[in-house]
Length: 426
Image (tube, rainbow, N blue to C red; front, side, top):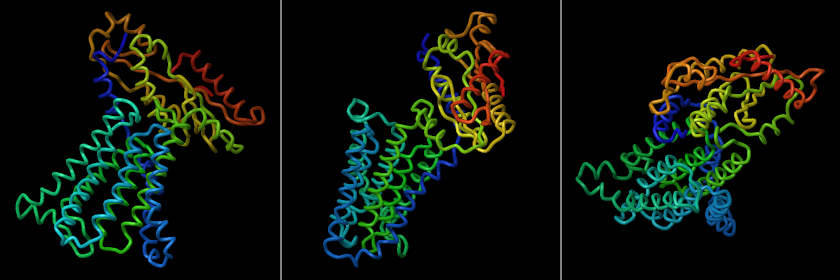
């Protein structure tokens, strides 16, 4: 029985309500921030370069963006492809149109168009889902990007022509040493704030790269009066996009797409680097096959995302998707008791989460049938819940390697299931 006909919207709402912020995701901004800061600092040394070195640097942003485009095509990442093309086009446009005084009417119009288009296009790339490139949705994403660019660059400059107050609000040089207008600056600040929220929700490297490229290009416009700033920030923006493509391709190989957790390959790499003191936990969702058969695979996928969002926050451990409905948590330098307490708190949180079903066709006809469908849960006929069981094992002389610890933790997992499920055994 499919869930998509009447319950998917409600269930999605439940999941959105369960979304958590991950402040640690802000650390992903550190590499782009370092690159941008280094470029801004190194700008002062550019005039001292020889002619050949200067020519190479002037064309380097195009080369970096071309490499990013090729890699984005290889890994089918439409957002990063559009970002790389946009950074190259922005750098070209600034070099062509804004290397003159903004007192000239055409330069002022171009500057306002760029300063409004930049935050709007960045917000678009942050909000639009990744759909690949050579498919209907990918092409629609590209078409929407181009349409927004045309609208921003065509209609944006006309804002300053509405009246005298608007002209002053969107006029350049609102303060000494700062070029971008108050209106464009406010828009940029709002987009930056939205980007930070999106980053802490999705925890993706590509979002951090987009914000890094946005910051570099914003500085190129806001500090346009500084010598060599457009070249330095063009290099920084191109490097941010290239870094984002590299990191997102790494995530494709090492991160599970459904749950967002590191996958089996990442776990195997981690196991090679463990020391002599660690605990490994194995978990899975109780009665998951029954839940899938009753409510459909779409709901099953949402359940796995829910469980993964809780396991991700386990204190002192790193969670991985092991396969199917099974997860693994590695606790370095932790005792069995500490690890068991952390997993038990997570288990209780999952068990107490309620998911409401609003489609009456999916509700059981009576309480006995509902109890059979829900397995280990004890809820009303219009609600479902899931539970997890876990097994833990620590490295010792009898289990000297990660393989034997995982095998022992797996045995403890089945012990927890035989004891009634919804518990932690060690």
